[in-house]
Image 1 (cartoon, rainbow, N blue to C red):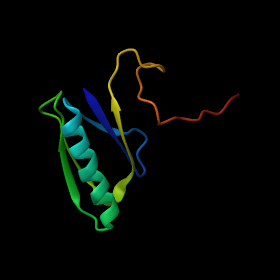
Image 2: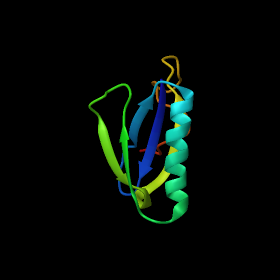
Image 3: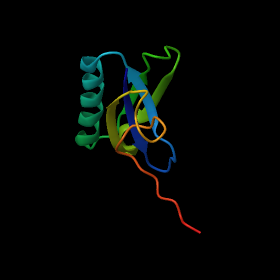
Length: 91
């Protein structure tokens, strides 16, 4: 399963959808990337292969970043995909 994470403006958590094959995931990634590059705000409707009832609509102008990662149960960091990080204030 391949997870595609979208980081959105003013949103603390990424929006994620999953695809079963690398080809399908690459197609969704490319679709989102092209929408971001166009500069024209458009609505992207995404579904999730793992949870068929999960649907999300996102305005392309609100997307700050996109990440595609293979979901692996042995991933370090509690199963979170690499690439996004959170900073915490030490006390």
